[in-house]
Length: 191
Image (cartoon, rainbow, N blue to C red):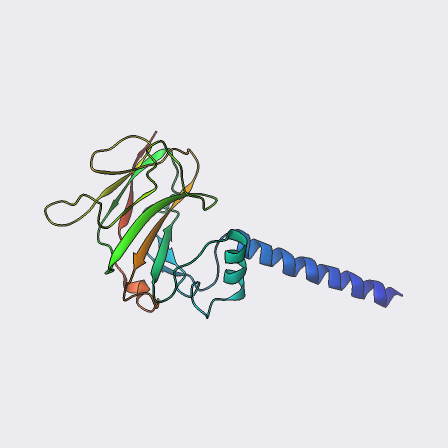
């Protein structure tokens, strides 16, 4: 009888540990196979046939449709270039090169992964609509107070994330991501 109780207790502990670890893995929105380039993180295998089971479970839970391996690659930033979390009470500037791609988009999401709403109905920019300086560089201001030029309004005081999607890019396999030069996310100040 003691052996049966020990067996049942062991099975319950194993089940709770397995289910709990899986829930934590898919609940945080971070899956295995992440590659980093500065503050930007990408998961190149998420949209491929080689996606791990945790990535597939996370996608099933969120309903997100990732870019396929031949379509492009999405990078996420949750911190600025100094390592501080992105929060709506601060202003930021995105500056620097974007990797080679036919098209790119930069979009703001809340901490739950939902598109951010604001009265201007501007959630992001794409490569063909940004204003550029004479040298061809684009700088995007992000924050709660209006800024001249390319401004992405953020109306939440909470954490948020930025997603930079590169469409039709030669780096979609993920092998060269560690060597990429990505745009900086520079904190300007906080209110």
